[in-house]
Image 1 (cartoon, helix red, strand yellow):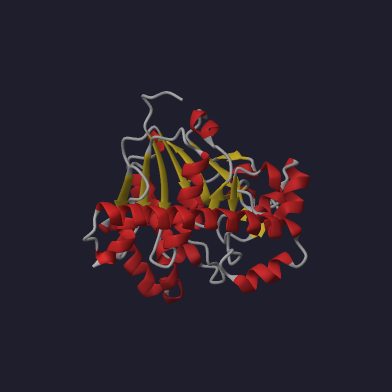
Image 2 (cartoon, rainbow, N blue to C red):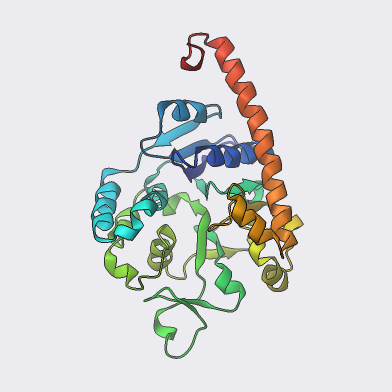
Length: 305
């Protein structure tokens, strides 16, 4: 890997997601020891102790959402009250303002990285992601309603043939640096959510803005165990092939009712949950050890007072 390239791993966190973010970061750092780039964490109003703990990792930069994005989201939330608890999901759009990076990898906090992803940073394209699960079923999305449906002569003119899941995104530096940011946040208007049943946030905006211009990577980099069968049929990829596992939607390892329900008839889910728990326990050992070391170095730190 060339030393003259600047790389970034970016994610979004909140107070409620803090330890899940830490688990994802820990898994990435342990499986990618070659990585010497920045770790950018987009967050707002994070408690001071949590912000300090994030610096247990090297080269961490905390970035607050910009005023233009926050103003747009406040206006949107006032009109769309059902989205007020989902506002932080839009904060991922801040990556399109970052400058000075040759490659940026964005990962949701509800992921674990189980293998090195060094090969991603050598890819030549501008923007990569993995497909939404509807694509594996032979469907796309109607661009006007974002409803999943097959392509037809009636919807062909305004159809998203390759809708992507934005939990994993790989961007070239030319896609960053602000030239798309205004266009993206200008899409955050109630009119885009004319189908009131939709709860998509940044995913809807990014798919609409970059219509069919995002290159698809296979689901090794955004593996969703719920769809193990259709992924295996479409791409011949099994859970053991995954480099990144995504616990999307309500299927989080820390939501125990969902763990019980989702793993009842899907052993792939059970296998994925087990992998996440292994990483979580490894992170806890790392976290508590590093806190002890920090306390020894700084005996007057807040937790020891």
